[in-house]
Length: 544
Image (tube, rainbow, N blue to C red; front, top):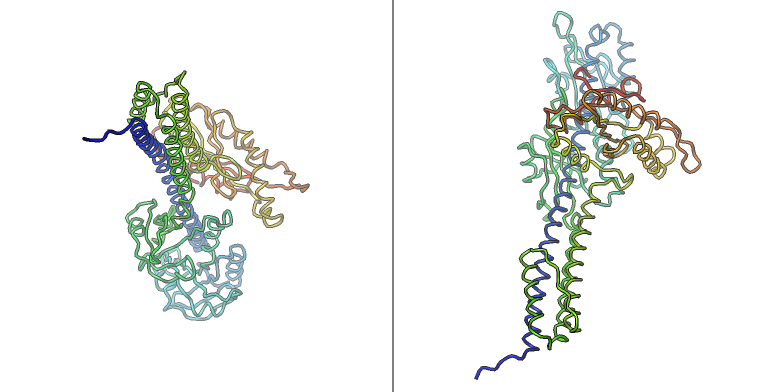
């Protein structure tokens, strides 16, 4: 005869299974979805960082490319009879832009007529690419060693010196080649750009930044032990295919890294050198907060199951009707429906059971809310509590999708004039306090519905909203008000500190969908403001 199971045992087993399934489903649905979103935000943030570095590298090279081309058009270089004046101009260029390690004027036969500090003057360098590749058009050479020049230039660090070449031909008015204006840029400026990224927050994220050459995927910039090695990574192939994104990838050391990638493809009329920019972060560090949340959810679920099993044993003698009702509610929750747990009165065991089940659901929902708060933190700058670049992008996307025919907006791109000297004089602690107070003043100058965001460093963006007829006036009003307010002194730790602010603006066209291009236009207008004397506001136009 088959032995039957008593009610107490049957109830204990059944109730344990129900709670286990319920906990697993709720934990999976609530936690995994939020964790997936959070992972994507982390990856997008890393992708945004490599874009920032690529943009900084391109803009820097574009500026140097433009300087050499502009100088080559000067009459003093076309007519080389006055070499003293040529030397004076070249030395002045190097003095004001230390990244130029060497600049020289070469005659059509390859002899250096004049150069900064007189280095290589009188030498024939016709065999060098900086001469023979620039006979017909501007030449931009990738990172390389220059043994002869390295031995002649000061080198306080003792490290191997590397250079990037920019040279351009000089033609007379009748089209005859009269010389070559050549320059060697120190590769040290790229390390400075890298430093601004990895040293933020004392590099708590342990992020490595790489610049990979076009020809053989050799590491031009990165950790010392990898310099000169060749990387064979899927992320490099994706970048060369035109993608800008992120992936989890196994590197040559056998470890997995969250890897952001982008192809450096030039800026304005500067064609670029085809570098791939990479940023990597160990997966276990990048996803540390997520792993902690998973451990918490699993632990909480296990404790909840144990707790309810105990309640099941205590409640072995309950009547079947309330038990069936609770089973029905559990099945509905497992199916994803939002239902309330019924409350029972009169039977103590059932009252405890229904109340505990309700508390479990509320706790799991609270866990989902906490994950939502973590996602919200990813959209704000930790120092100033202003929205960051991700939040700015989401805000602009909503404005574009709204397509209000009565309203449009202006992007105001700004940075501080003199901020670096504050850090150098008073330290980064005072600089951080100054950025917080700057953010407070900017927030006071914008209206309801408008947005102020910090992109990083001392760069801020404000989105000013108004009607199509008055949007430029609104943008000018907000920009000038910010310039005026930021010019007032700041009192920090009993010190009076003064900085300025330059602003560039660009107005949204309702027929366009490219807010990234609009931001770049505002950035270009900002540089126009700086070139015209700083402390000014300029709207973008195609002639900027």
